[in-house]
Length: 544
Image (spheres, rainbow, N blue to C red):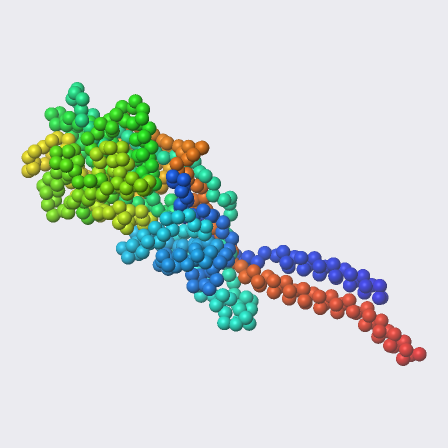
């Protein structure tokens, strides 16, 4: 009998050992939720890094009011995001930050957008090590956020005993992303060009009309850029359509050749314009010659709101092409919409700063007369580089486009009578076309990092240019492998998983409790043979 008990004890000991290992290795996750998340922008420009350098997330979730955020994933709603709060989280080395934004961001107030402008400027001014992600609000995420925010949290426990109690009756969330570290992506930028050519056989003067078409924001997939510069592209294409009519009307063809240029990477220091110009003007390209001989380069940047400003590097002298262009705009404004504010804003190009304030400065440094038309009075105005730039006033865009088209028409037709409009009857901007163009651009991915030659927005711009102009060419420029002037990175869109788990310390206490229980049972059973032997010997002594 004693041998049987010993065998049973050894077998039970083996079973408890295996059971202990199973308890230790058992996953703590209760449920898992999956979300699509967008990583904060990351790129290199001119040898400098910008944006989020990390994509690693495998941290416990915490609310923004947690005492401890180091190596935690902090969950915030957009309304909780402030400049000071983001600085504090980054300084305290939060492992990751997940910001939920409204599904319908067009309903954000001007105050919301203004506050976000400051946050976006802070995050994008230098590289940061904290992983920053964005995701759209949804019911599951709201539930997780509520539980993390209102659930008992050991970070706020008044005593150690209270903290220990919280561990046992509260659940947490582990936020995880899977994948490799961000790697350099295929870095290509694009330019779409076209021409309108005078029928004159003489050497014709020329002008250039330029606009950048890319979007920019805190995360490439979230950027809308409806006004800056969806409105500029819409006005650009409508101008090309109206001038094409003018050039195809017998007896009214101006003597000017016009180069139309839609450029990418405008939000990245107008890199596509700079690269296109450098390559074309240093070769025997007729396009480069047309640009180098242009009397004036007019850049269009954000014209979907009130007011028009033309930005120049200096106040032009009387009789120069820049002065004539200004007079054309003033005459067009006074003739069509006399109550509209139009002003000239001279700003000297800072040659010591490699970053351009306005698009025209790319051409000014090459000694070309140029200016930028914009409703923004300053290059530092909030909204020019904002993720939630979604609002364009269609009536104001129509009005500003009408002024633009009339001014350019007056310049190339050299009209002296201020009471006569060049564009009349059917040759006026179409509000419906402007609205559809802005709508398409603001709902189509067009961040420079996400574009390829097969992208729908490139095809759209090429087709539109082909309808209104001739000799349409799509050029692409790849970053140098040896010494890239710009570099994009992948992992812009990821799957994020939220595991409903007990806190990590709960596993430790559970393991200790299980071991203590199994140890006690094991010791009791181990002692059974000795107890039985003692009883047997005691009975034997009594019987003798």
